[in-house]
Image 1 (cartoon, rainbow, N blue to C red):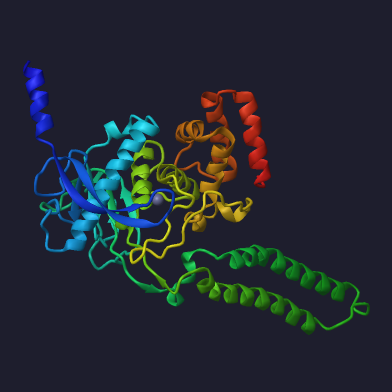
Image 2 (cartoon, rainbow, N blue to C red):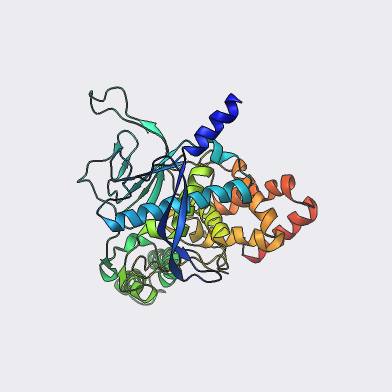
Length: 404
Ligand SMILES: [Zn+2]
């Protein structure tokens, strides 16, 4: 009886409140605002729940329902709602036990500080961050930190403020566009070829001075010319970036449902794949579960006034190239598409289980696509697939068709 009373007391101490949030419409990536109920709230006046507490910046206090910054309240409700859905997705669809092991998550909105694994927050002035989100691992300040500066924290998700950027001012380190990729892949072979040609002609000139035609100088010019040409093409193709982008770029991560699912996936997968690392495999795994949850033709599609970011396409048919392994392409949809191939072969339910299981054979340090990811999927198939021998063969063929 005592237990029943206690259970009743705990249950009745949780609240539900109605808020406006942003959702994708059924069967489309279009968005709409909808009134929904936020559940499992421990407070009746702030975003402090049993599983999630939403705070502003570096604050330790949950955001009030009545905060005068109404956009902040909208973002708080939105992240709380979609995180609750993400938690349910992992529990019910993937049948993962991980959500039960995760302590109450602190969710930081409008935080621009860099993450510092020794101090939690880097100094306010150090390279403020916008237009992205990240999940951070639990940690604590080292012992030598002066009193009053100590800090201990659990896993957290940080959503950066939105900042409108003119895409023409983009630095080139955002990752290559398709044209740059092709040309850059050609750069080394071309220069090697030109260098070899120069060496051959130098040797010819020394050994058979009278036979070689053309002058040493003209060879040098040709060699320099080859390098200059490839360099020029590469830099020119980088200037084509705006063709692949909108004029203005901004990404209000707290308002894009799939970004919320992606970050929660990092937390769940962090038992094997560290959150402090970002590789194509780790990002692709989080993208897979964000896409599996969203269940739309494309993920991270534009949200009017909130995000101009290009969507990712799980059905992308891009073949494998060594470029796919580059950390600069961690933000592309290549790994997502490879994992979606698994779904194409094995169906949704088995693929979800298999991809989740595959993380057991992956680690943060072993995460190449062509070797570690494929091997872990095939190994995982031995444990999960209904007909392992045949299914492995079918997966093999699918991967071969992608150029592996
Ligand atoms: Zn990520």
